[in-house]
Image 1 (cartoon, rainbow, N blue to C red):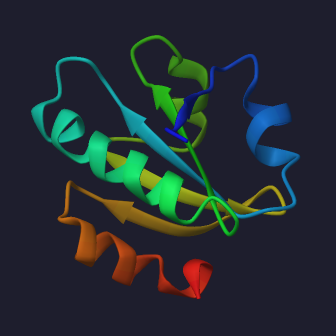
Image 2 (cartoon, rainbow, N blue to C red; image 1 turned 180 degrees about the vertical axis):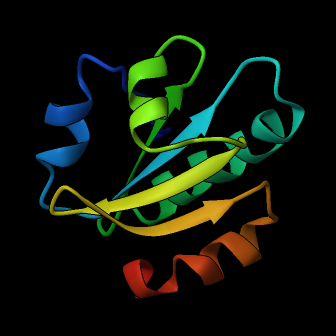
Length: 107
């Protein structure tokens, strides 16, 4: 199950209302590191679907949400739980490093 897209319009319902931890990948088409980390996030979404959801928000198409969460560099991944940001990971990383960052949600 690959990460699905969310928008400014769907963010509250898709992310903030979720009971399950949900990681939002803030990205853009033109961002090389974003494209590099995308398949890794899809793998994490598939392998850990029972523990964490992964969604992607294109910052160019959805500037309101990106501004609200002060996204200044991409890729930035924020984990939300109960409508609050509980973890922020900035920059593309290899899968083991990302899984390590997310360990508290994947355990």
